Length: 287
Image (cartoon, rainbow, N blue to C red; front, side, top):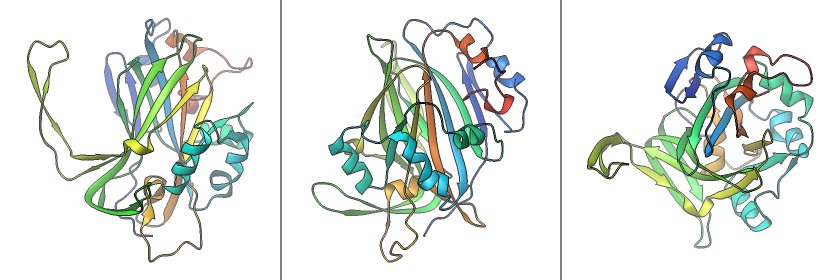
């Protein structure tokens, strides 16, 4: 595998008032500080709990066993086939969480970033999936045939846009994206339409054809990852999914899966007890 860069282990919690970056070992008080009891998400607010779990490359649970507990057709058969051709696996957990997944969600050694973000419906957020790479080399497969892409100083990510359904669920739209190069000036109309704003953004390749949508009930879990094939040819570029979830740490390769849960209503739900037992501090964002 041709992957560069180093894995950066960070803890991110985002609240209504802003962002906090810290160490994964910090105590649960960090979460309470940014999500005080009784905080209301508002009628169109969605709380996204986002976790990346990291294990050794080819880990049996992340690579195969976990997916036996998911509905992989949640994106539809046609879209599922296209995503798998490009190295992505998407599944919604069916029934109770597997015990091994629960163990990983409370293991500080397995969690890469833990992130919470409150968004108004219709607002886009970007979720980085790995470190910035000196070079990213992958193959995109589409109806027009395969196409090889090489980008310098690249970082794989998903954009996620939530929307609300009438039955209390949340619809999430995912779009793969690869940021690359250096930041450049970007002039946009201000949100209040009163003028222009200047931001600095990196160029990005966004793959709308690989977008998918999933509708989740409160506290349902969605898993996104890839499949590691040990005997894959070294002479061909990796799939985009492999580039997103197979990471070179500098010493060895690791494999990741993205775990997402949504909540609507009150952020005080985060402080409730599950099954009569307190929520573990290491898993306060996801339990």
